Image: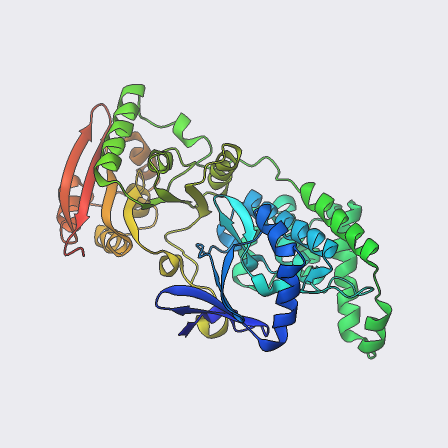
Amino acid sequence: MKIEASSFKDYDAFVFFESGELFRKLSENYLPVYKKFTESGLYSRLLSENLIVGHEEITEDTIKPEKVFISYPWEWCFSQLKDAALATLKIQDIALDYGMSLKDANCYNIQFVENKPILIDTSSFEVYTEGEPWVAYKQFCENFMSPLCLMAYKDLNLNSLLLGNINGISLELTSKLLPFSARFNPNLFMHIYLHGKMQKQYSQAENQKQIAQNLKMSKFQQKALILNLIKTIENINLKKYKTEWDNYYTFTNYNEVSFGKKQEIIKNYCTELKPARVCDFGSNNGFFSRIFSDSGAEVFSFDIDKLAVEANYLRAKKENEKNIFPLVFDMVNPSPNLGWNNEERKTLLQRLESIDVSVALALIHHLRFTYNIPFYKMAEYFSRVSKYLIIEFVGKKDSKVQMMLSHRKDVFVDYDEEHFEKVFSEYYNISDKQKIDSAERTMYLMERKNAE
């Protein structure tokens, strides 16, 4: 039995793995709460509305939840974080109807399955006590409202503050970072500024017990609070941003014929390999990711650009695409192991399992010219991810490369097809190579050497 490193903080249950299978062990004290959770109809209601992960009861105190891929909030685009926040509030609103309440509301308890946010922590509930305020209110605001407000009102990249504050962005810090104009929003003033001030006063108060006794809230008042939070979150929207990769495929140097040829090549590779799980690195808005997802493969569609991921996610959500999973990922600066003993939050590669194909289209010239990543580092990296690699080489005569080199000295004497093939051949056998006419680009299909 191997206990999941991130579950040690929950005194009511812990997650463990046995023979590769995932289980949740419930404490003896929590069993009556779990019984109410299932017998009251709350579990069935949440399951019917796709708001909680399903599970199988193994013994009285052990359940086997469905296993899902774990992502983190700094890997989500704005709308993913917003949808996760709204799902949390909806769950709390429903729980109150069944005499229960969420005792914690951290963002890691929500994960995405088929692009729908669901709760994965079955032991997050407690029995509701009349008059008690929502104990997870502060945690919700710090885990969801703070990063959403900072992304919308200040800068799109500020959800990355969660990397250095994995338990949530404090209301005090959020109040300092938000523009002064945000204070004129009455809901933000209440949930961020006033709430943060009260928390500070409460922590410094001499008689905290007496203050706690005075903080009474009826179920009606708590339902009103949840409704107000829902409306507040719904009204937090992104400003109109524009990034380097916005509408990327509208301004490529591919003409209609060569772009169609590229699609044809990738479709043929997909048909040949029949992958079950694919990682598309630098996927932009997911255009080529969908060649694989449309074939039935589960596709992790990664890009550094948050707006590209936003567009990818919103399309997947609108069209009910279940096989594509858009996420924000910076290859040259990935998030490290974080938390207690550097074990609570894992790197992306540690969380990925059984990837059949890695895809790197129009990517390696950015890695080489912008970040000085040599070919051997790229080859070694991709070989760790999957058995097969579909990769595009972009020559120096390409207009995009010429633009990149116009602002710096060309010291990249090893950047040509010959060196590229030589280095990657140390890790891969080149199964196929196809030049794209009228474009300074070549497509490769590679198979990792000594692949099991």
